[in-house]
Structure formats: C-alpha cells, structure tokens
Image 1 (tube, rainbow, N blue to C red):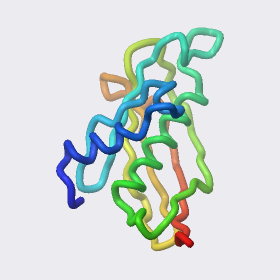
Image 2 (tube, rainbow, N blue to C red; image 1 turned 30 degrees about the vertical axis):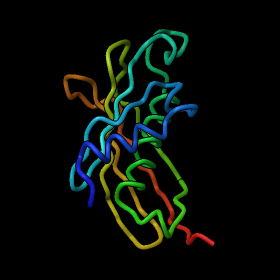
Image 3 (cartoon, rainbow, N blue to C red; image 1 turned 180 degrees about the vertical axis):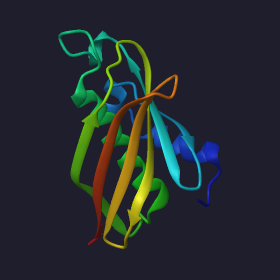
Image 4 (cartoon, rainbow, N blue to C red; image 1 turned 135 degrees about the vertical axis):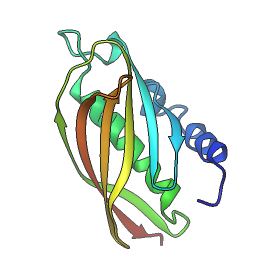
Length: 140
C-alpha cells in the first residue's frame, strides 16, 4: 500500500456513485496491510419478504468488497480484474443495524486470487462466510 489509509478509503468510496454499491449504501470503512472492510445498512430495502437480510444483498456486499480489495492490493494499471466464482454460506440472520464485510487473501497468485470474506454484525457475530475467486487479465 503506497497510499495512506484515508486516501485508499476515499478512492474506494469515490467510485460508488451510480453503482450497485450506492444503491445498497455500501461504504468502505477500514483497510490494512492485508484486508479491506466495507459496511452496509440493514433496512427493509435489503430484506427478503420475511423481514431478514436477503442473501443476495450479502453476496453483493461480499463481491463488492472483494473486488474493491483487488484494486487496493493488485496492479490494476496492468490488469483487469474479473470475478470467476463466488460461494456463500449464510449462517445467521439479521433484521436491522449494519453488516460488515472483511476481505482477506487466501491465495494471491499472479493470475488467480482467492478471497476469504467474513460478514459480521456490529457485535462481531458471523453472519455469512464467503469465498470469492478473481482473475487478473492483462490489459490490451
């Protein structure tokens, strides 16, 4: 990381207008040497019909933070990053408050990367465990 924590978070949040991240109110809130964390409010607009956080919204949050982490930790001047696969195990429901997603590398290869993304509530309880695989493709 060549930029400061605040510069990285500012640049991550600057690209969200007019995207799914803005629609879901996802904001990037913390970054370190090997992780990026985002949060999303849990309101009725991201509920499934029975009033709990929709699994698709959780996966969207996870993929958003994993993809943003690629731009923080990989050389995106030379490579395009694309998602290859995502899988999620939803372990606990949440009705209100905020959900946090923390992305960390499991594997940081030259071509493929595997991310461990944990979604937790404000008390730190695990809500969903997600694995995201990305690929770095040379820019033409």
